[in-house]
Amino acid sequence: MTRKIWVFDTTLRDGEQVPGAKLNMYEKLEVAKQLKKLQVDVIEAGFPSSSIGDFNAVKEIALNVGNTDDVMITALARAVKSDIEAVYNSVKYAKNPLIHIVLGTSDIHVEKKFGKTKSQILDIGVEAVKFAKTLLPNVQYSTEDASRSDFEYLWSTIEAVVHAGATIINVPDTVGYAEPEEFGELIRKINERLKNLNEHVLLSVHCHNDLGMATANTLAAIKNGADKVECTINGIGERAGNAALEEVVMAINTRPSIYGAYTNINTKEIMNTSRLVSNFMGLDVQVNKAITGENAFAHSSGIHQDGLLKSRSAYEIINPTEVGLDDMELVLTARSGRHAVKNALEKLGFNQFTSDQFEGIFDNFLELADVKKEIYNHDLYVIVESYYTKNN
Ligand code: KIV
Ligand code: ZN
Image 1: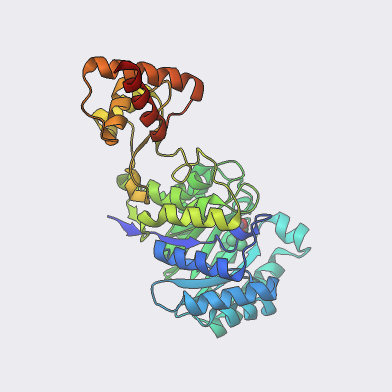
Image 2: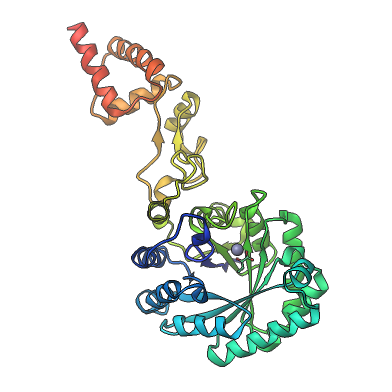
């Protein structure tokens, strides 16, 4: 049985917290429009109480991007009245607005960050949700640092805020501390107890990448009952970043029998979105980054190129056109074999060579590749031309 996984994009909130990645209003609107084309279910547009600029950007996104039913617009509030009001006053222009409240549940947050008792923090959370519910029907509650919290206290917080009216419970691995089996087990336990409450609540996760496990933890959560995932484009975000939307979505798409789930994402818009975010934020994508890195679909070894040309499935698990790229890319280097070079020449229209001619051209190719490393189409033209000049 397949179930829908909601995709919540926080590129404009958690992602924009990256030093040097601040966007202006025009850029934020363009990113939000592109996220809508990508068909994310929820756009977290900012943190309105942080500045008037952020407030105005969230409001513009609510008005111009949240004007249809297919996307929910939200923004972040701490569990204080003024923050919640700022969120309400900026997202209320959307057709489908959501208030997102965050408050820590770990001992470190409760005692060290807030200097309060657990029951005081729990009461603050409940009051915040009750207040938000007087403004909007949809309220998400994030139990910050959930993965380092005492489970029974975490659960009593979840139970209390659900009774107060929270419609989405978000379980963050705020500092990227969890590992997949452990995080999956945490989600399984919460999911089981939530079911017993018999309330209609979505269970969500928000994973950071400090130990490189944000995607793995998010996927483990889906296997254990999470209904919604919070992600950013290219995995940008605080410190080592957040779970990368493109990785989570393509993992679900590529291995449907493992996850038994689907998303609404239009995967053909993944590369456009990745490039837009990278250019606006001035954050280069690591070349070997899964799905959106420049080399993610580029094959350079001769053995692989030969195998791919015989059967794509030999070395390709995702057709690049599925994420909006043109097609498979073979990078010609000195390690490329005859098959790959012949294929590249044929694509340029050179398909009449005798085998002797091809051998001569291939020798010239190897000679140039040894000094130049990568051989592009314009190099192939030069190789062919100089072969003819020498041999005619
Ligand atoms: O990392 C975190 O805990 C957050 C919350 C606001 C969800 O970003
Ligand atoms: Zn976060």
